[in-house]
Amino acid sequence: MSEEKTIFLTSGASDVGVATIKKLVNAGYKTYGVVYNRDEAEIIRAVNGIPVFSLPNHAGELRAMIAMSKAKVVVHLAPLAANHPPFSPPSYTPDQITQETVALLEAAKAADVNFFIHGSYTLLYGHTNGETVDESSPLTKASDPLVAAGILAEKAVIKSELPYCILRTGYIYSPNSEAIHKLDRALKSSSAVFTSEGYAGWVYADDVANAVLKAIEKQPEGEIFNIVDDTPATTAEFVQYLCEAQGIEPPGAVSSILKMFSRNPNPTLLGFSAKPSNNKAKAYLEWSPRFKDYRQGIDDLLLEWRAQINVN
Image 1: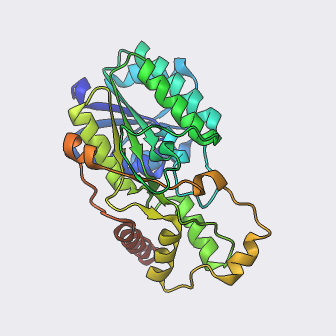
Image 2 (image 1 turned 60 degrees about the vertical axis):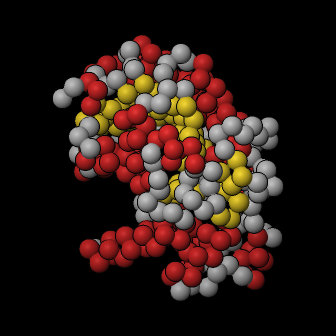
């Protein structure tokens, strides 16, 4: 297999990583994914990817693994671990996002990589009072640490002198998303769930994987794309439909009372409201989301959950 058909990606065992490996393998790519333990390695092997062990912030180790794989395209999915729906604390710290991005860029340059795809997020547009934003819109100056780290990581990619493109995704969800499982358990136990009426972009993990494939094939150097579904929605709408689709009571008085004694895990992010447009990705990448809105995505993930129950 040629080097052009070999891909190296970070966060391979995450829900979006697994979806991407499946997509790339089916398209004929030999795909290496960074893992941190044996359990993650088994997850990648199960979808015919090749696990590689490396410290995510160690440029020397990453360079050796990229060189070993002979990959000429690197896909940095690790920052997307922090881009789950904001119903629980981010699973990635701001320092991880910046340090791991800088280390991977250094490794990719040393390994003579031809193209770098960076996973980012549409949260970087911040609060626009619900107005539509596109890739030309200014980024927020809000002081949220996660957002600041995302902006710094993008700047590092742009200044790296590597050919690159950036995929800014909406909130990513899937049947295997731990954040969605936590949300579901909270709803079914009448625990406090914080939502807002602020708009945000959403995207199913499989649709992110397809966008990565399109970016690998087209390699649009120096471009930034919003990877979101066609329907910006509020967190309140997302939660409401997840409840309705399962026939459970949406958060009501009990949740409201519990909120008085609970800590909002993402007060800044829940205060944002913006409607990211995906028109550029449709035009330049010829990408379009299979799941046009969060309702279609939730319906699919519930079908997958039911299938998993039936199998078990």
